[in-house]
Amino acid sequence: MKNHFFFLAVAVSILTFSCNKHDGHHDGHSMLNINYPAAYIVNGGSNNLSVINLSDNKVSETINLNGATFPHHVYINSAGTKLAVAITSTDLSGGHEGHTNATSGLKVMIIDAVTGMIDKEIALSKMPHNAIFNSDDSELWIGQMDSLQSQVLVYNTANWTLKNTVNVGAGLSELTFSHDGSMAFACNTTDGTVTLIDADTKQVETTLTVGTAPVGAWSASNGNMYVDNEISETISEISVSSMSVVSTIDLGFKPGYVAYHGGNDELWVSDATNGKVSYFTKVSGVWVIQGNIVTGADAHAIALTNDGNKAYVTNQGAGTVSVIDVTTHNIIQTINVGSKPNGIALKQ
Image (cartoon, rainbow, N blue to C red; front, side, top):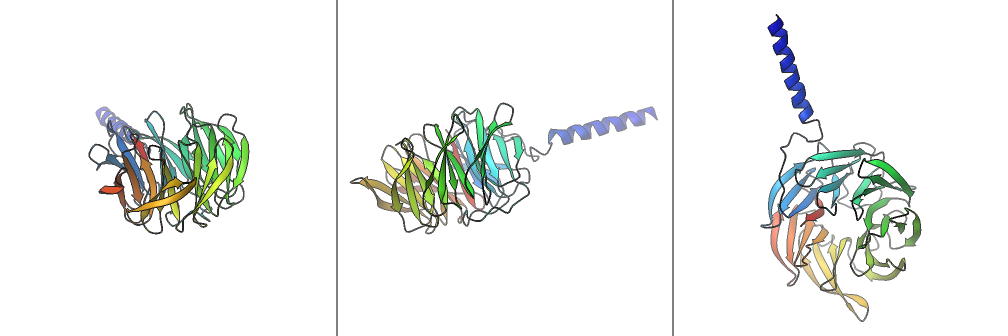
C-alpha cells in the first residue's frame, strides 16, 4: 500500500512539473534559437509571428501567442533581445477608426527574441494598438485607445511596474518615438491630432492638428516625423525641433505606413488601396512622387535594413512579405507568411 501511494505521489509530481513547465506563457512550443539576423512578422489573422532568416529570406520559425487573437504590430528593443506585441482582439486590417469596443483579451506580450518564449503578459482594460521600448530599453510605452480620452502607459522594464500615465486624445492608435528618442508621438485617430510627449519628463509638450484619421507618426533621420492620415489620404510632415507641421503631402490613396531612406533622401509610403509602395523625393522643397513598386494587396508596414540596401513590406491582403532592392526599386523576392501580416521588426 505504501508503494502504491509513493508511485501515485511521484506521478502527480511529474504531471504538476510538466504543467508548470509550460505554464500558459509558452503555449507548449519548443524553445527556439534565433541566433541570426531575422525579421519578425505579426500575422493578425493567424495569431502568430513568422520569423524570416535575413540571410536567405526564408521563414525559419513560427512563434505562437498563447491563444491570443489579432496581434497588431511588433517592436524590438535596441539590444535586439525582446519583442513587444500588442494584442487587440480586433481585426484592424480594414482601418483604425472606431475600434474602441473590445473589452477582453487585451494585453501586451513581451517575447524573448532568441528563444521565442513569452516572458511577460501585461493585461490591459483598453485596446493597446502597439507597445514600444524607449531608447535605452529601460521603459516600455503602451498606448491605450479610448473613445473620449486615451492614455499612454509607461512601464519600468526592470520590474514591470507602472511608472507614469499620460492622458492624450481620443482614439489613440500608434505610439512612436522620434529618431533621437527625445519625443514620443501619440496619434489620436478620432481627434485628428498628434500629441507630443517629452520622453524624459513624461509631460505633454503640445498637440498638433493633422489630417483626418491619423494612425502613426513614423520617424526619420532628417529630424522629422511623417503621419499617415488614412481618411484624408495625406501625409503630415512634423518637425521634431519646432514641434510644428511643416508640410502636407497629398497622396490620392490610403497610406498604411511611411519610411524614410536617408541615403537616398527618399520617402516611401505604402499604398493600402492599390497594393504598392510609392516613393518620393524632394523637388524644390516639395515632396514629389517618383515611382511605384507593386507589392501585394493591402501593402502595410515598411522596414529598411540598417545598410539601406533592402526594404521589407508586409502585404495584409496577400499574406506575403515583399523584399525590395532599394537601389533599383525592384522586388527581388516574395515570401509567404501567415494571414493578414501587419507589423514587422528587424533584428540585425
